[in-house]
Image 1 (cartoon, rainbow, N blue to C red):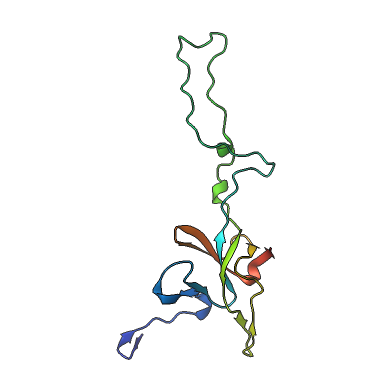
Image 2 (cartoon, rainbow, N blue to C red):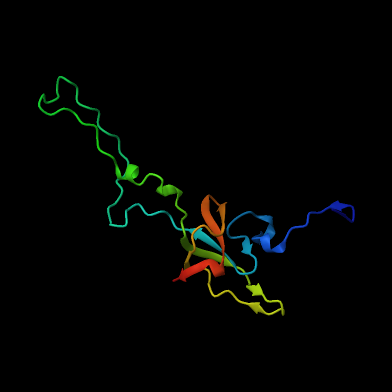
Length: 153
């Protein structure tokens, strides 16, 4: 739309996640709107739920040459690694992390602002498959609404 000789686009205010202060596109400059939180996503665990740690990657030894191999014990390729057993798990939605910044709260229809009950520095867990992904300063973040948080500590 043209207004005062300039092009403008209308957007639904509920779809806006936040603003960047000073024009810098960094996590420290991001200010979530309403009851949204900017959360630095926790790194994925490197062990299974039973406590088995994933080994650090290292080169596999070359198979023995036929001249050195024991004739009674044929060479077997190494078995499946924990990484192979957990294939596809990297697609799981990480759903916890440290709160970096919070919005001012949701405004009711009567104009009363309900403050956010989460503070920067706290940790939250949110419902899976909610929020919006962001990559800032080379780190993984999620912008989630407070109502989707299921735990805080």
